Length: 154
Image 1 (cartoon, rainbow, N blue to C red):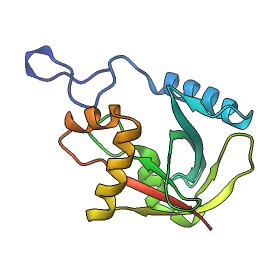
Image 2 (image 1 turned 60 degrees about the vertical axis):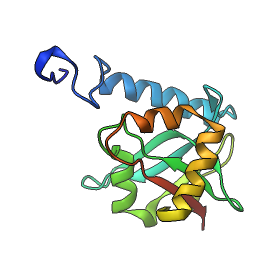
Image 3 (image 1 turned 180 degrees about the vertical axis):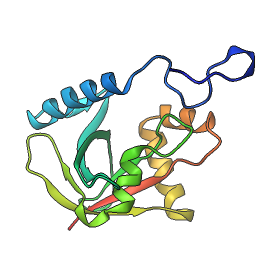
């Protein structure tokens, strides 16, 4: 069910009929593609972020667009539809020591996540929006600043 604001508009951050079931199906399909060696979607490189649920401690995997950073580090953006941090971000922050990533056709690599802030975030954000201007458009429609997370192989 989609929340409605006064006037019949859809509330910010609510999917327009897009179910969690459909999201899980799409994520599973993208994960299969990445594991099969095909790691791009809509012109963006994709990795699989492996986390554990912050409450359940069950394994979770989320395909995410990534952007190159210094060395072997990758940057990911926690946009979550604009209105709130996505579940993967909360899981990652709750159990950072259990995070890993998978790149196309490669085995999982443990990573150390770091949420960027200040000038470091601004530099990373400039690189991200230069590579994919749509992120700047998404950000301009949100009332919160999207976290940028650096994932550095351990």
